Image (cartoon, rainbow, N blue to C red; front, side):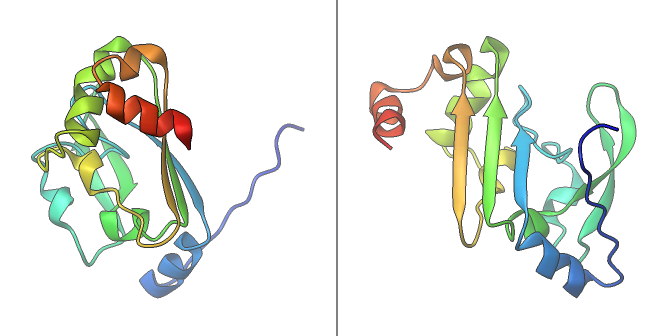
Length: 137
């Protein structure tokens, strides 16, 4: 049969926001700093009213649906999983430089945790202070 799935249908943005507050969100980071199909420079980055938004971009450059920052930031726990040396510059730009042009910087849960899980290659440009902080927690 496969893994158990939960499908949630919502009728209003308020219900979606309520459900999102109970979700564990796992997202990735692109080499360009995009996350959750929210790409640098895209108009969707400023969306504050709609909860689910259409975007076009990425590789492949296709139409997608994604959640806006208000929904992502309602999740109780957000985990970034980042693997690969090609992501190291983006990781440093987000975690140490706080480059606000990169969408991943704007993922800041209002409650709960923001956790970054990086392999050695993705973390190789981080300062020793950043890595030691991560290892001590």
